[in-house]
Image (cartoon, rainbow, N blue to C red; front, side, top):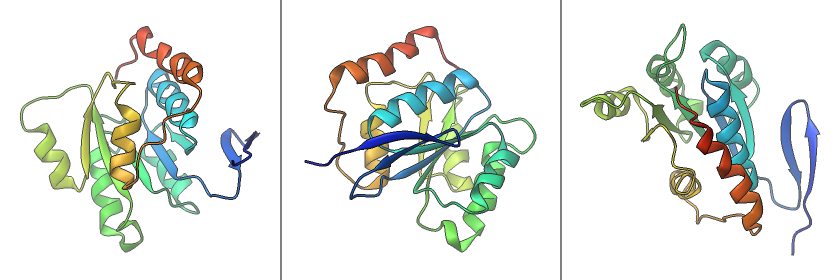
Length: 165
C-alpha cells in the first residue's frame, strides 16, 4: 500500500509517493468551475494546476508540461480554441490531451473544438460523477476513484452550487 503525504506547495497540491501523479491543467475564467474541478481531480490523486486565462496558462506552461489540459472555450482575450491551436503547433504538446469545456454547447461547437485540435469535448455544468472516468479515458488509464467515498461526496457537493461559465 502506498503512503501518500499531501502538502500545499505554492498553491498546488502535490503527492509524495513512489509514483508520480498524472498532471492536469485547468484553464477556466470562472473561479467556481476551477474550485469544483480541482476538488474532484485532487481526490483522484492528480496533480492539478489552474489558470484563469490563456496568458496565465502560457506562463505556467513555460516550465511545466501537463499530461492533460481542460480548456474552457470562452476565455477573455485569447479564447480556448486559439490557445489550443497554438499549443498543438508546438511538437512538445503532441502527447498532451486537450479537452474542450463549454457552457454554450451549440450545434457545430464540438466539430470546431476538434478542428482546433481538442481531443475531447465536455459540456458544463460538468457532471461530477463522470468526470473522473472521462479524465482517465483521455489519459489512457483505468479510473482510480478515490477509496474514500466521503471525500468524493464532499468534492461533488460543490456542483450543486450551480458552477457554470
